Amino acid sequence: AQTIHQWPVAEIKAVGSPLSLGCTIKGKSSPNLYWYWQATGGTLQQLFYSITVGQVESVVQLNLSASRPKDDQFILSTEKLLLSHSGFYLCAWGTGEAEQFFGPGTRLTVL
Amino acid sequence: GDSVTQTEGPVTVSESESLIINCTYSATSIAYPNLFWYVRYPGEGLQLLLKVITAGQKGSSRGFEATYNKETTSFHLQKASVQESDSAVYYCALGMNYNQGKLIFGQGTKLSIKP
Image 1 (spheres, helix red, strand yellow):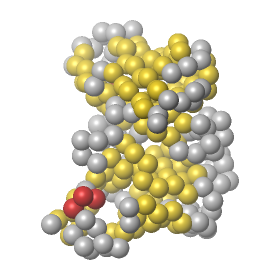
Image 2: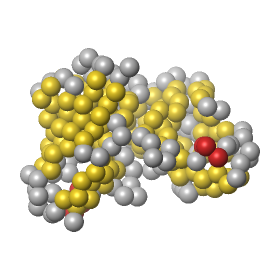
Image 3: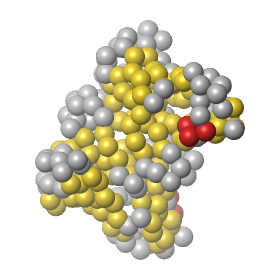
């Protein structure tokens, strides 16, 4: 069975500080990987997707970046956090055909 | 553009009553999108409740049903008799069935069941 792990579970960070969120998928070879973000009271928006190692496409510009250093790992980062980055970040995997499977998420608070 | 609109919450229903959460979509970039209902139970992650990838078909899971209606561009979620354990946030989503696999979500509907 496939499992998806996200870290950290929650973060409280200062405006202007760097950020790195991670996601690991086990039990699935060469999945499509996705990052989603949900602002408080908002809807889930897809931020990035990756079909293969080393390749990431941006869907929404939020002054964030993503990388896929390994087949099973997806990293979301920024050098400088903004207040507007607060929210809930979800990593997901899929095959590109139908449904996606989501991780438990990371709650980010920027102060 | 592509978008999903669903019943604005919160919604409160008494146990054993029927439920309908409305979902309508607009799909301009693809003629026949995939349609999904996801659910987040308290303290748990987002999980797939049901999916339908063919227009005119019905999906069902855990007593919930939804029919893919292309004429009305709707995918309403229904249950004949809700239970307290159905309390959760429900999300309707539109899926693009090509390589990117983009999902577009509605705003979510928080459902509370009164015992």
